[in-house]
Image (cartoon, rainbow, N blue to C red; front, side):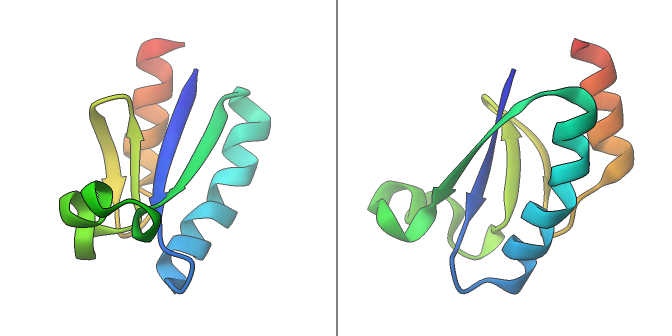
Length: 79
């Protein structure tokens, strides 16, 4: 499984969520793709100030802050 983190390099919340995801990756073994929304005008328009956003395909798991309960539920549903 691959989750996607929509991210901005200068965003402290983005860096915080990325760091908080590391133990989850180790435990559950999912891949994580990090996409900088500023590198793609379409992503920038779509997400703008909503970053960070953690998604699994078209399903949003959480945004702004890592929601551990929602992530655990999501990983449990597909695991």
